[in-house]
Length: 144
Length: 144
Image (cartoon, rainbow over all chains, first blue to last red; front, top):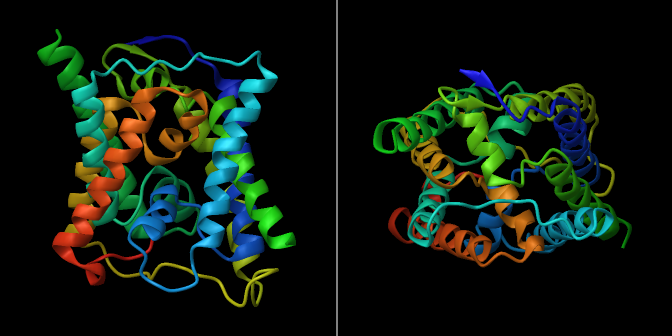
């Protein structure tokens, strides 16, 4: 192991903003800022009159990223190296997994852990571990 | 109106935070998951920042009788750890490790205008719809 590309301060600052967002949404609206759950409630709604806040939050989410780009000379620094097939397959797995497992990095990893939910702890450990194993296989077993 | 503005603002904070922390960048996320290679521990600091703020804020907010602009809190049930939770988290973990996107960053990255972001988000929605089609709404719980 070798430490590489480490940006602790911007990571911490960005994380604090994400935490403030989750606290704000809970304070105002009484909802959990879990992005897969928010999307799920739009594409496969389970209760009536529950759409508007979800759409507004997602509009804000994209606008926030766009604002960051604007303030940073139309930043283009993100790199998505996976092939189209892998991106599509990974997207489908993410959709299935978050629907079956009731949450993702934000819902389980931040909001659920903040509520000291044992379910979220189990889920977070599981997807972190499997994410790590997947990258290990891709980069060091198949690619190595 | 106030509620709509504040929900959009919460989304904005989230999207901006994902960019500041670079979690919106799949290459950065995969660098974190690749512990055996050149390891980038930054994502741990994103989680620390977000979870730190949320873990302080959530209990304080949830001890109030209700949210500011909503009748009640909408909290996922505190049921036990079951098979769908873990199986779902494992499937999601594979998708996460393959691409480097989880749902929040994938949607925020739409602001970067990459075709692969749209492909990922569309595939994710298809995955969610497939689960709804196969399992029906009852097995699905809101995101913790």
